[in-house]
Structures are given as C-alpha cells and as structure tokens.
Length: 537
Image (cartoon, rainbow, N blue to C red):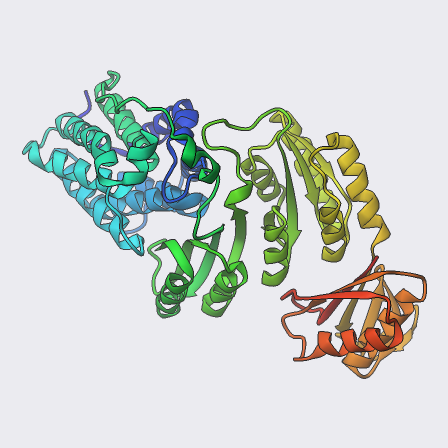
C-alpha cells in the first residue's frame, strides 16, 4: 500500500493504465455511440495515453521546473504528451483531465488522499471548460462523479480516496444510459467514461497492489434494426477535423466562436503555456475547409487530420481482412476537403514516417493505399509502408506527384476488385494524368526554357519549366494549351491560396473557346506557393 503519489508511482500508473486500456480497447470501441457512432473511442484513448507514456519515457532525466515537485513534473509531462497525441473527442478531454490533475498538485509536497480529491475536482473543472457544449451522461459526468466520490470519503488515506473515486465513477458510468437516450437505445454505457474507469482502476491497482473490482456496467442489449443503417456516421455533421495549433489566447477565443458556428463536438484545449501556447482543436463539421481556414486565421495549425464518419468501420464489427482505405497527403484546405469527400484519410503536407504510419493504422483497414503527391514524400510513404507491414497492414504506395493525379486515382477506385488490381488501376489513372504547376520565380535562374528573373511566372509540366511569362493568367492559359496539344478530355484546375480572383474562370473561358469539347473542373485548392495546379486526362 502506497501512502503518497510520487513520480515513480505516476509513471507506473501511466504504464499500467495504457496496458489496461489496450486490454479493453475493443470493448470500449464497441461502446462508442456518442458524440457520433464512429467506433474508435478505445483506440483514441490508447493512442492518447501512448503519447503520454512516450513523453514520460523520453524525459526520465529531466529536472523539474522551479517551484515544481518531481511528481508534479511527471504529471505535467504525462498531460503534455496526452495533449500533443490526443485523438478524438475523448482523447482531448482526457488530456485536459490530466492537465487539471497535474496543475492542482504540481507544488504540493506530498500527494495524499485529500490532495487527490482536490486534483480530481480540478480535473473535472478543466474537462468541462474544454468542451464547447458539455453534455451529461458522458466522460464529463464520470469524472465529476469520481471527484465527488473522492471528496465524500473524508479521508486523507490515498488508497481509500482512490477506491472511493473509482467506485463512484463506475456507479456514474452505469447510470449514463439514463442520461443519454442514444446510449439507452444501443444498450451501452458511455465509451469515454468507461475508459476513465479503466484508468482509475489502474490507479487503485498501482496504489494497493490488488486488482480493482469495479461495478459491472449493464449488459448490452440487442441493437434495434431500424438504427443500424445510421450507426456509421453523424446525421448532421459528416467530418471530424482535428489539429494542433500554435496561437495566442485572444485568437483562440475567436476560433472557438467560429468553430462553434460551424459544427458540434467542439473541444479546444491548451497546454498551459498561455497566452502563446499549443492548442489541440477538435470539431465535427460539414465544411472542412472552413474549419481548417479558421485555424490558419488564428495561428499555425499542423498535424491536421480529417476523417469522414461514413468511411469509418462499423462500430460493432471491427476491421475485416478485406477492409480497405486510402491515405492521402495534402497541402491546402480545399485540397484536403476534396480528398476527404472522396473518403480518404488526409495527412498534412511534409509528414513524418510516424505521422503517415499513424494515419494508416487509424483507418482500421488491413489494406491501405497511400497517395504521397510529392517525390520527397514518396520515400517517407515507402518507409511507413514497411513499418505498417510489421503491424499486419498491407500498404501500397501509388507514386502520385501532384494532387490532380491523386484525384484521378481516387476516381477509378473500385472496392469490388481485388486489392492488387485496384492498386494497378489507380496507378494507371494517376500516370495517365499529366500535371502542371504555375508559380512565380523566387530568384534569377537559368531553366530548360531559358533564363528567368525573380517575379517571372513559371509554368512547370511534370516538374520541368516549360514556359516563362510575365502575366499569370496568360501563362496559365498557355500551359493548358500546351498540355491539351498532346490530347486530353478533362482539365482539372486547383486554385492556390494566393490566386487572384477570377483566375480559374478566365482559364475555363479560354478552354471553352479554344477546346470546346474539353470538360473543365475547377476547385479552390488553397495550396501555398502555386496559384494554379493543372491536371489533364
């Protein structure tokens, strides 16, 4: 029996909690019917706590900051790691629970029972503050009950208070179907709340050396047949958008209001480094581009992920051997939205091997196609594919060099074909799509098309400079003419974030005059540096 929560105990709690969450991962995934039935709460909590564990393990020799205790330092590392690796609504809320817990005891010399109760109450406040529209019958209710249970013990004995918190949390979890009709209809308890109970049970086990015996949740009942067709996505909002954001507190306040008007399940939480800090942003929306653009307006968003709920696996079945998915690398909010609408998992530009691997594994599919859209990223994608194989996932990299090639590949995807045949068809479609990029020269240089000066308009076809011009619109029209001179029936135009108003309309009108039988599709791509990307098929 331990009477204080020291740094070593914090590390054992994190490790034991992660093991316990992995053990219950599938069970918790099946419980996930709120905020949307996306069947991944258990996975999200495991990934979130994995990041917390990694943060702890990488800082074994780091000394606490001035005014911080060793246990407070360990708890803050755990909270920071959870924040940076938080996945999904429940993962973000868990990171705030850990942050509130850590902040409450960071300067407390010895954490005993009463300090634990105070920490759980602070964790509750942090969790409620993080959620735009708090809903009872969720993880919030369970953490609040844990705090109350801890307080009601009236004890300073650490194991006694931890047991009181875990017991009260389990009782509150069992009551969640009475608070949320969606849970009652599905005959389940709240998934995020169940995950928190697993973590509290792990704390009890670490403190006492004995396995916890929480109250069993009510048994699951049969799912009504009428609701099965809707169980793979939200009826109101189709996409989950999540990213990390470096921004000032004032800008984040504006961001909260903007995102609240766009969707629901809004959670915006910081790392405690305010006024300038790192924030984890999570929201469910229909307008993906607007959600990402709001982040750009607030600061610097990165590690952007977009998931379409309709493409996630059935929550009560899990991935099957022939489950398939596509992961696409995208730079630009509009491009990301196009890929998400095609059912792809989107990773922001210039990803690491770890980020691509995480995206592949998050799909839950056994066979995944990766579209890198850049020569440099192709090597990273190949490394991620090799690593994914070790985890039992077969990944094929289709070497796309431009987003327009990825759109061509996605257009021919057919889940009824053998996976290998589908990959070949996607590769052939991408290869048949010629691509061009139009930009401004950043310096004087000698190109294969002749010398250029800084500020000149350059048109690159398949990576080589073909045209040098002075006027952006004229050069864009000229490169389309050159590409169509070799044949083509479909032109795709992606306007960049700095493209002047009317650019794609002018090019479309030009094509209509010169090439009347060619179809043109134009979209706002939002990519930096290149006012226009062109694809010809």
